[in-house]
Length: 380
Image 1 (cartoon, rainbow, N blue to C red):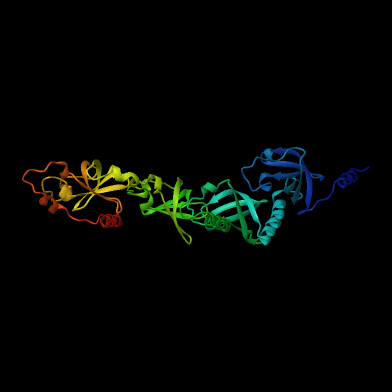
Image 2: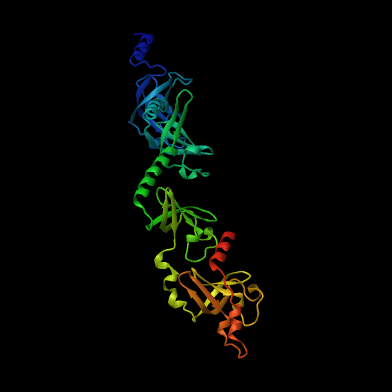
């Protein structure tokens, strides 16, 4: 038997393969960056990491083991070293394209892990097909920092499918919007004015805080944050805080919230605590030209008129008092219906024999406390 004839017989014992063909191979060796497969050909097949997956961080020794079988695509039948170059990734991409096409046509919701966070959006991989989700389609509101999505599994739908240009666009925003609409419907079907619910602070502004109630946001206005005076909502709340709130009113899609719970209302037992003639202590909260407002406790302010600050004549409250100063005074008027209290330091002192009662009365000036407070709140 001639050598040429033996070689021909040897070659005939192996199957023939062609570029582009899909063949089954058995793993006979695996390294971190390369897999060797027996594909029943005269040469073994080489499958590099780049042709196995789009994940460059993968260690092939953790992905496959000797003896595993897999279908691969033939890229070259005889490279410069006489080897057969294979691809698992491209075969997976072919299958992935069909998978993505079906999902696109059926508007199917897909789930995939975010493999890359870019300045303009997120990249996910489905069956080795990379799908891009633009930043504007990630959520229903603008998110400057998308890094929190790295390595997270997210759901989306394919809204653009163009395999010729390898352009696959995903949309997560429409799912978020639909889910919130469903949550909002459930929320409005169940809550009513007077309910006490838990919420999460979503945003804080100078005039109040927006609270996520699980489907819809409610506004907690600065005036409803406490029975006491709140100078700045940002000093009280921060985004992410969990808070218990009272549903004050619902008007269409607008929800007004409050933290003024009835059981914490400081006026409920004020009649006895602040009866006329009682001597009380408080701190000067703010001042005007006609007097000082003294905080007796959070939620209860009393007016100390300029004429009642001292026995001597006082031109302006700021001449003898300062904000934060503690003062002791006597209750000279209490109006529960209008929630008004008037104080007097001068009344703490016994009148001089020469003083006439009419002189005291002439110093009392009628002031609309509610109007003054409203004007000050508008200024702040």
